[in-house]
Image (cartoon, rainbow, N blue to C red; front, side):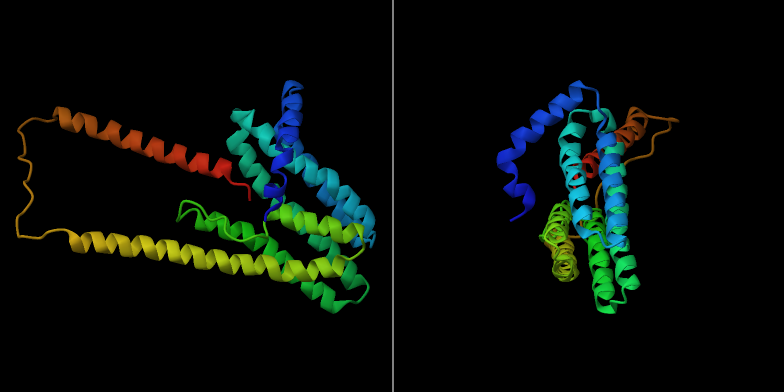
Amino acid sequence: MRIETLGRPFRWLLDRAAAILDKARVPANLLTLTGFACCLIAGIFFGTGRFTMAGLVMIPGAFCDLLARPLAHRQPRTDFFGSFLKSVLHRYADLAIFLGLLVYYATVNRFLYALVTGFAMAGAVMVSYSQARAESLIERCRVGFWERPERLGLMILGAIVNRVPIALFILAIGPNVTVIHRIWHTWNQTEGQRRAGGQELADEPTHGVSQPQQTALPFASSPLESHAEPHGESHADNRLRDLLSRAAKRGA
């Protein structure tokens, strides 16, 4: 069960807070930048071995991330760019946390923990990347469990109770398993589409009857030709609008 599923009973509270921030004209991108700054500070605390402080600093950053989405929906003018900015800064925020842990474990000569941190860092980046690449081929790829809210929640819990190594071992395995799951899911979806397309072609009747060809008219242009280009432009615009809408709705 995802954290966002567990948080559904409290969605009204987030919506209420987002409405207050919207009335105060607080931009959604400001919350994204605040969450990013909290993760950078947490990474510094991790690098110096102050795990509890790092966990406490990550709490307001996680809260800003939760509020950024409902606030962005109330500010549609920044929704497309805000979604892009959020995705980029989230990746840097994750890397800052794990880099801080790498610095600390390299300083105290704990090679195994540093190695586990590296696997956890790779999994955190690849979970979002696999979703983004998969959704350029298929409609949706949200299979698996270890997305950013789950990873952030586990890191906060591990830091506050001083059990960061246990959290890292879990994050070194879980997100990478999710990546494998998404690879399998995408393969199934793309192969299913290819086979369905091949079956449709095989089922088409071929009786040797050729399609009627249009007779060339002696005019420089015709009403059909004059409407062909605008129709293509409309189709391209609809396709672009659909891609932007899907990108804005991703919560990677």
